[in-house]
Length: 338
Image (cartoon, rainbow, N blue to C red; front, side):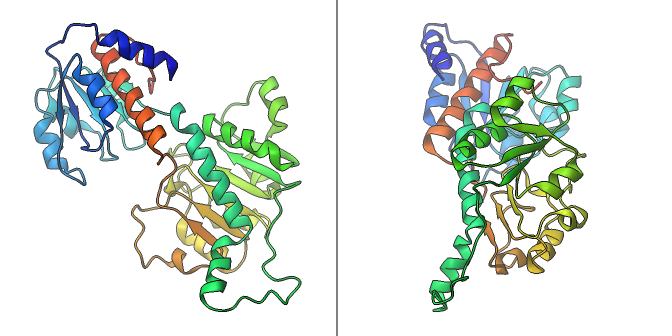
């Protein structure tokens, strides 16, 4: 963040332009709004949750969009804004809700904010792994229902992280940040499935080996899903995959909910085809309170809070603001999506 902090100081000295920037969420941190306000006119949507009707109405005539929600960013938005639109950024790592090919065809630069959330998401992933592997949710239920039966030697046995083979479905920045945290757990090694292999020195650093998806699910004791949502990854973890996994396997998803077929996951957990799961993302969000997954003792679910720390969300907003300012200036974005 040091580079963009220096750029923030430099921006203060620039003359204010006639550009208008629409910020589509009223809770985008003030630090980003202040940065944009130094050289642009900032328009902020006020509805919470964000209303698409307000976004489309206020988009008319703006030169840039700081997209602060997961509302579809598509042709309707471009038409509402008009031909003067010069730059768009999300305030997220994933851009599966953006019509990327459309923006490319209009030659509109698109930014996003991936790297600054790596640490926060990795921290939560580790928490989900431990909570699922060591049955923390089920243990709390035992206390609440007065079924604490510690007179059994084999009561509430969980899965060891030590000597585990850890699989990664997707092994980019977030996956590798998780892998760094795993080094203190004395794991046996890492398997990963990606389109392209890591550099040899990276594989050596993490004791990692690229394998086909089938081998990943068959041999991993713990699997982290850290891949983007694409047509290829959609529903990749389904009944076929679960049948190949170890009955002691723990699945952690901090990527996107639709990568997992939730009905198949429910069956796999209910029948103990796999041991446990930890999810920060689900399909759909918000998850209904009566969803069958919530009835299971061997799953831990958090409400998509991977990047939900003050520092991380503020950093994401500042990166997004710099994406906008660079895009308006005709410069390469600080964190381009393409």
